[in-house]
Length: 186
Image (tube, rainbow, N blue to C red):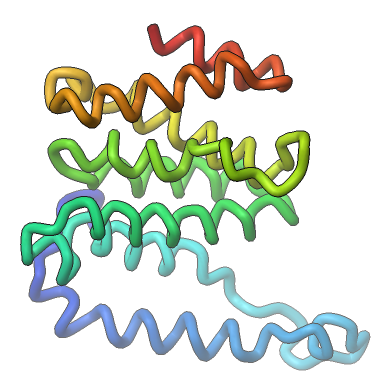
């Protein structure tokens, strides 16, 4: 797939095929298959790149975004990205994290800041410390706010307040790396 915007027609033609391939391969990748020393096939193809194509499309198109409910679109998209980040934390993730970060650049207008506010929210962490998935989500949120040139100019007052509240929570974090990200945003 080219490294460009994904047309809406893609969802009707190629999207369902890509989704079916991902579902089929992931359906084969079970614990039983993984534990079987005589498994056949011995290896399954990596579906991550296909999942990133689907994510790029989701960044640009959704029923919520098309109806004008950008907040719902961003929440749903952030939940999807968070699940991917959570799954990355359990394995070798550096190349996949870069692919995920690259897929996030397809968000439009104020959406990167909105998604960042959902991804980077550490106020609801389950433990008193930040886990690797929490840290990955914070890193993705920081990237959304820093990589999108001019994201500050696109935010309205309410969104600026939400971003600043998130940054305050990062600056108050017990994790030094998160505190640095919060200070670095200023």
